[in-house]
Image 1 (cartoon, rainbow, N blue to C red):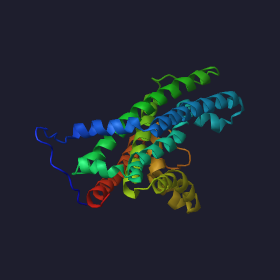
Image 2 (image 1 turned 45 degrees about the vertical axis):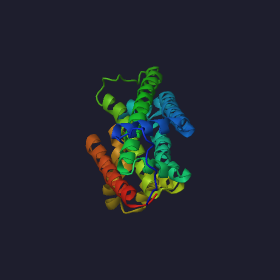
Image 3 (image 1 turned 60 degrees about the horizontal axis):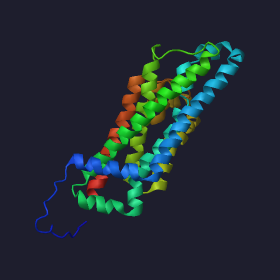
Length: 274
């Protein structure tokens, strides 16, 4: 792609393109889009509201639980149940972060100003990760405290210092952030909002149930390595995964998926015209 640019006027200093300046530019674009604010708000409501709903329902029905259900009951995971739904909102936001610029044609202006291209991708990933992690950690802490308050009315709540509680709360934010980054990479690879969102939804919400159609000897090994099955263990969600990985091993597998897709997105951005 060739771009014709006119030389700067006499007396006008050249401004060097640096990664810090690109980050500032991407932050301005990210926060100025109305859909960003609405998506973040929806994600907060989903994560906190659904977590509170699950906690209230479990607290009221606990007396009717079977012995097996009581043995597997995890008050921390219950209060973080909204994480699964918040991932949808953050994944969509991740796709829109990049595909939106391709849809409007703004990506051409961005790449004209930053001809080396890759700093644009690093800027988007950096801004997105910082905003999403901060937002999701706030939501995760709020969902935990509210959920434990509801469960404590039936003497089922635990404190943040309980074994695994802090890891699960922080893990929910880490899980959401990496999933959102996967959305950014899909938006970069497909350059189309519908295709990116459909792929994200398929990987996280369609592919896992389909594995149940496979022989159990295969499904039991496969599900623990899928992005959703591996990553969700970090915040305590192991439902549907018969042989779950350890929390940090599962998160490492999810991060490996992210690294591979980021590398693919970087190659696509650097070698294809906008």
